[in-house]
Image (tube, rainbow, N blue to C red; front, side):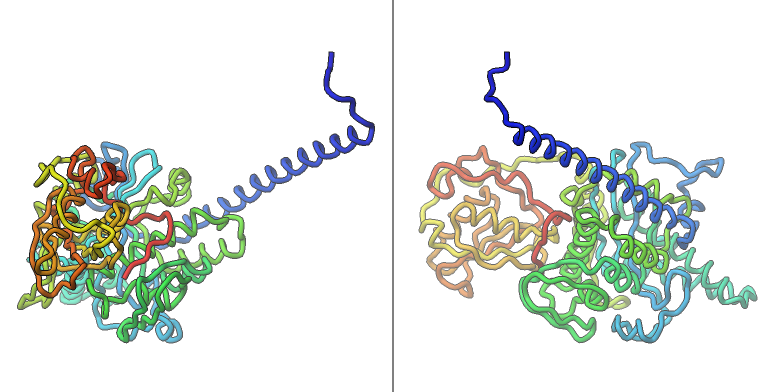
Length: 510
């Protein structure tokens, strides 16, 4: 027997009306989602019809003996994303004077340097991705016998040489020369990247964007949000940005990713700029209703067709379907290790690269290596409490967001927040302190897990400590008493690993 309170006729009618409204609303939303999803994918499927392609992969060593593109053994996809300093669009047509003026791009100089090179590794399940940046000034062995030069010159060197050979053979069709020489340059760049990884990576897909992409795509999306630690300006790139969070598009977006003048880390800071920009771009697409805004979607598809070149055989609609499980936090950005900037006779200022370190670095991203290091001490250090010590952290390892993450971990342990900035490359981690304040340094070293060298430096202000996180930096082992008790409280927050830049949230950078 029903023991619930009796309902009035009016109450029953109200409940039935509410239930009917809820069901109708649910049906309406469900139908809208189905229609919008279909309409969105209908638009995206059109990309495959008109996108500019190149047979740079289909004609390379990734084919088997029957001429069929070889599928990676692990099912993973490795995409080489290249940003080209070109004043032409994807079809080779010169950009208009109006767009060049907006881009602050100047005039063509006869070269086609690749200012952005990112290798994107996507496992078979399509739910995560690691994007590895290769600095443009990396001093590496260029494939096809060109010798050791800056990485960003690989495409241009082969392109220029091939173009000259074709002209000497009597070819006068400039369109044919442009097409064949550019194709040869792309292949040389791919082989150079693959060689640098020691054969541990085989490029399966190739995507190339030019200067116009930053203008067209960001305008189509209505801009992307970025954040700067401090105001900055640079005449060469046209950059002029205030500090803090801001939305950029068009010419400002191009200036943001091109600037390196006035940045403390030079090209390495520019790489971080590019990484957070791409992360912001991915976040905008993944976290907003881009597919529900038909006008914006149409503009985006038009922009992609105009400014992007893809390797042949790449079905974008199918690829997008496979990537539906990808969310912002599962896109991570890394940078290969490089040495201190140095001058060369032929290439000017370069970043030295040790191929063995690069191979180890890339293999480490695919495995779960966690080598332990013995702490320097197992006792709680003497000295002032963390609350009396201001800590500044400098990234001396070329690892994305290393300084910020180390500083965050130290602040969580009670230290006062200072600056997080780029620093000169160093193999080992050092902690610099003012004369007579070694106890402060030891307190910080203990919080870092004991793996750092204390260095007295009379340029360090009293009450402050400078941490230069080098290539040997490892997050402290939380089972180590020195690390756990660095604050004197007997506990410390977990810092299992140094988090890279991701597409999840807005990261403030230089």
